[in-house]
Length: 143
Image 1 (cartoon, helix red, strand yellow):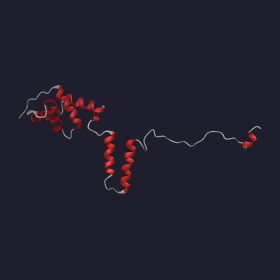
Image 2: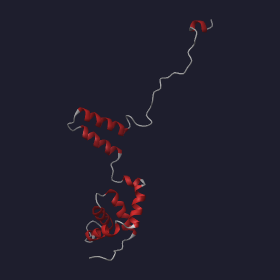
Image 3: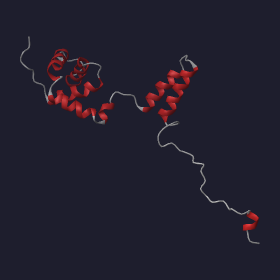
Image 4: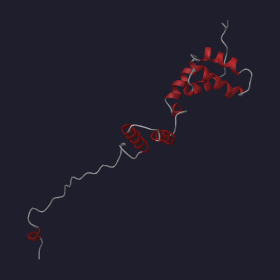
């Protein structure tokens, strides 16, 4: 039906690549990208989204930008922050759980917040290397 390629701006390709990181499907990414560019209630959003999925998904501008975004902090877009993740774990501990499972959730919460078992935790070394006197103390001390 549409054999001629539709052209897209660099802005559309960039926005589509960003949305591909966080959307559940290419069509959802295209819809969000079109809404961000055209406006939420623009009549062209649906059609432009479908064309975007067809022509932009394998576009070198999108694949290249997507690869660079995945290697940066932008790849964390849409993921919960440390606090949100900890809150989600905490909420799971409030549900009826087997005691062993509840303990696992508490352990995960402690590790997430840095209370337990993280790298760089304080280690106590009780190995004293100080030399103790070989003779009884009363003989070593001068009077």
